Length: 123
Image (cartoon, rainbow, N blue to C red; front, side, top):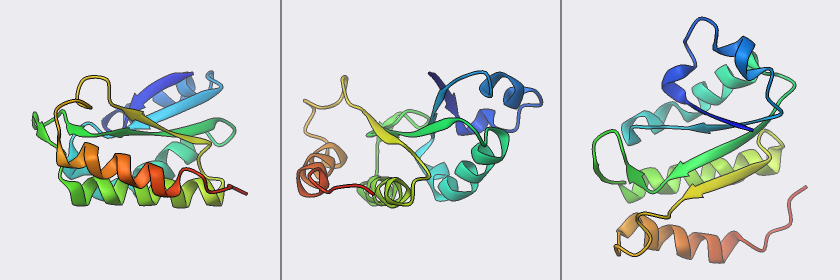
């Protein structure tokens, strides 16, 4: 398993390295780039059509060094759930270890969302 970031998907030789991995988690470093989630997943699928994919979900905007806007967190989670149901990804990963006890709005929203959808059966 390997992690890649959306900003690495245009690197000339990234595909030949990623195709050697069984599973690839894709992460968006800057929250403002989440608007391109679908485009970036399509790029990853094209580069690695036979690999398993997971969506990495930050609850903090590491690129801007500020809290993740809740609207972008919602979008990230809802698209991830949709992709899970469609079989486009195999799972979602939430990076939380360093922000879960800071009472951030995006973290609290995500906790509530997971408690609401976490019991859903996937196809």
